Image (cartoon, rainbow, N blue to C red; front, side, top):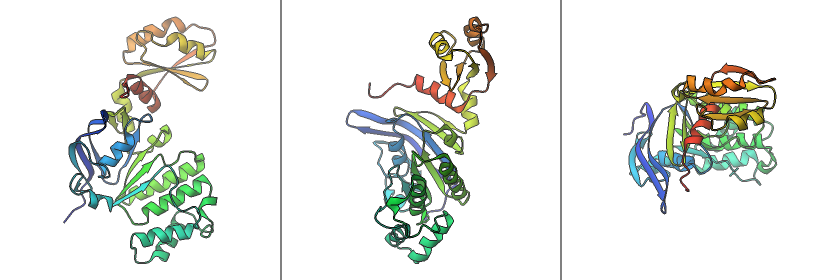
Amino acid sequence: MNTAPEIAIDVRGLTKRFGNRTVVHDLSMQVPRGAIYGFLGPNGSGKTTTIRMLCGLLTPDEGEGTCLGYDIRTEADKIKLRVGYMTQRFSLYEDLSVRENLEFVARLYGLADPRGDAQGMIERLGLSGREEQLAGTLSGGWKQRLALGACTLPSPELLLLDEPTAGVDPKARREFWNEIHALAAEGLTVLVSTHYMDEAERCHEIAYIAYGELLTHGTVSRLIERSGLVTYTASGGDVSELAHELTDKPGIDMVAPFGASLHVSGRDPAALEAAIAPYRERPGITWTRTEPSLEDVFIDLMSQARDNFQ
């Protein structure tokens, strides 16, 4: 009999190839049960392939491990029964109502009380009053809630979210994440891919994947600390011209515009200070030592990654 482990996912050396291209290479990680685990990385970096291997939806060419206590190679069918998957593209029936979609999912999974379970989910996600509205007429935020309700209705142990808030307004995104945290508090493990830094910061742990390589993983504070970056913010004046002048100078590892200011980072404090010293007296420019942000860390990591298409 399978028992619920404290570690929901434990994999080692996962590698996946498509043709002669290695999409994911030698990836190892652990995901605690009940954690919200974020996946970040550029498009085509292997995030979706990684998530599918982690939960048994895709068989790795190399490597091994378990998901929810089941072997990802030999017990994939058992894993799939315990996984909810919410894709970026709305995948429910647009010509059915909110209630009809949820009741259909409930019947598909053989729930004992489809109508009652559907109504309970409608109330939980604030969809009351929209039960009879056709799914295709909902706004992006309401579609998102409906999709989340559909994939959590069968009470999965693991939830996969593939860029779930793309194109959704900030208020709807916040409400969505509040519900995700509530589900995680009930024991649900969540794997979510996102491009939004504020969403990454709401995850318990995050992993950054670039071109098939796992570059770093851990809590946000640990990732920032481990980066070793020292950051200055330059504001005022023509920061675009300043960015051009500072790029690729010895001692500077990253230059990135942030609105009307510029983040300038390096790993060697003395070399960084020497590089920016000639610009400190430039009229209109103010320099401030700041804590590196998560985005600083990821921009720096991206600059070091090698495209596996090349």
